[in-house]
Length: 193
Image (cartoon, rainbow, N blue to C red):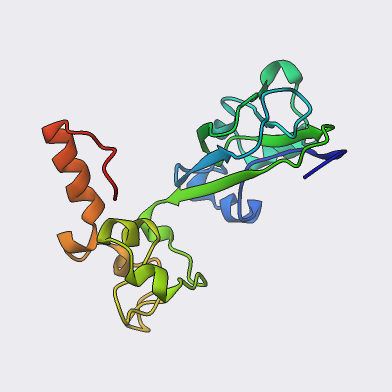
C-alpha cells in the first residue's frame, strides 16, 4: 500500500470471533498457528506501513478487544521498524495493526502461516505441478495430501477433524524425521528442504 493507507484497527488474525465462543475454550484462542511476516520493502522508519504488535494480548479474549473499542494504549504496543529481508515470527492471536504509510513507497510484505496439521483447509487447491516437483518435506509444508486423497476424508462417515488428519505412518511426516536427525547430529539446518 502506498500513501495515506492505514489499517489502525487492532485485531487478532481470526477466521471469526464466533469460533471461540464455546465454553470449552473459555473464549481464548488456543495455540494453533504462528505467522511469519517477511518484510519485502523498507519499513525501517515510522509511517512506512509498519506492523504494530501488542505483546501479551494473545492471552486475552476477542471480547476484551471489543470492550476497549478495538484500541490499544500506545504504551502497550510496539512499532516494528524493519529493513527489507527481516522476518518476524508471531502468534496470530496477538493483537496487531498496520500503521499509516505516509511514505512515497509501496509497502510490500509476505505472510506465511503455519498451523497444526489437523487444521488443513478443505478448499485449498494445490498446484499439481508444484507438488510433483517438491521434495517430501516441502510437500508436507505445503499441506499436500497423499495422491488421490480427498481433503474431506476418504470415508464420508468421518468428520474432517477426525483421525483422518493424523499421521498414518512416518512417511506421512518427513519433516519430523529431518528435524530429529538434525537435532541429533547438530549439522547445519541450512541445507535445502
